Image 1 (cartoon, one colour):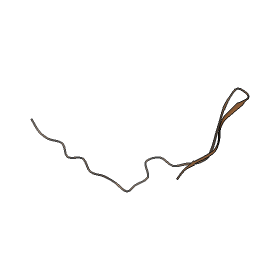
Image 2: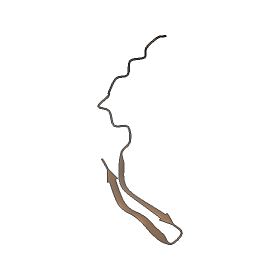
Image 3: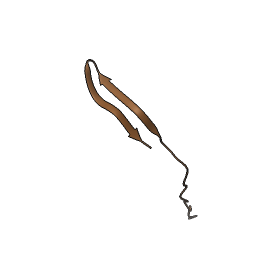
Image 4: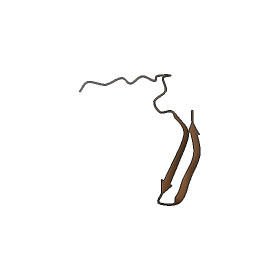
Length: 35
């Protein structure tokens, strides 16, 4: 069976700035930043 080698990258996979999430009139997430 062949082995697969994985590598780690310094590139950004996900970047979130000033995200807001609403469910109806309920503000559940306010100004979320994952940078």
